Amino acid sequence: MATVYVNKTKIHEPQIGKYIITNAEIKNSVWVLLKKDNKFEFKRGFNTSYVPSGNYLVENNILKLIVNKNEIYKFKIDGDKLIFEGSNVDSNLVEIGTIFKLYNRK
Image 1 (cartoon, rainbow, N blue to C red):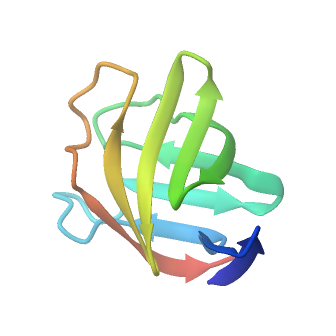
Image 2 (cartoon, rainbow, N blue to C red):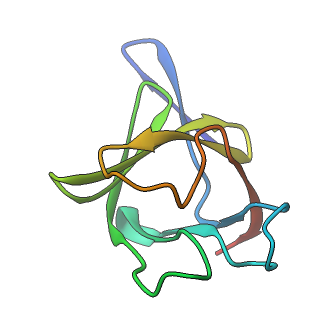
């Protein structure tokens, strides 16, 4: 994990790679893929074909996956884990508090 200092404040940047939840009913059915140039894909379940994608940014140790202004997903960064904190989209596909762990680095 890279550490960046901004105005003497330590900011943690998540590593590029695939983060999965280990307790998914179908292995590898729910994941977050962080790519180069702050791009992402977010697979929220095996029962949906829609895979949100867009750009991500980090603010105050919170990872924001931004599809557009009406669709933003938030995760707390905890080392090699991302903890889902919610979104502005009404969906029950991923529960708040779900932990995604870095599975492989890109």
